[in-house]
Image (cartoon, rainbow, N blue to C red):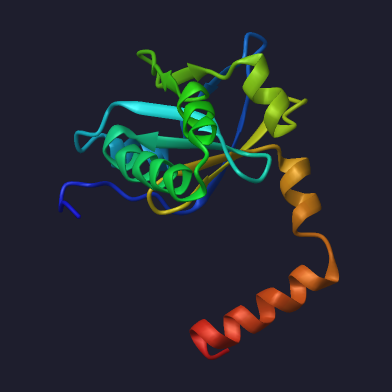
Length: 152
């Protein structure tokens, strides 16, 4: 893996404007300021959206292509590539989140949640994310993970 790749971490909430415009949070813009300006967006696996730099998207694309080949399902890769869109930042670091992508992710209000996930940024509806993390099973998993990873 190249040393010039950027990595994302942390979370940030933002708001969507009336025309679907949303500003990329400062914590992620600062990482991109080091040179990786091209971004791609696509529907994610869990009712969220994935934002990749071009450099990191190559890895995701290759994994999707390999999966399609192993599964003997070229339609999977075709659909994957069909859903990828270019994400254009304006001079104020905003981009338009299409109605179709907002519907996919269940983003029906003005609030939006960004989560840095190492090689990608995930975009969530805060309500959808809260629903995923609300149950007791999730809390038990988090406790076990903290014990396994951090010894706490």
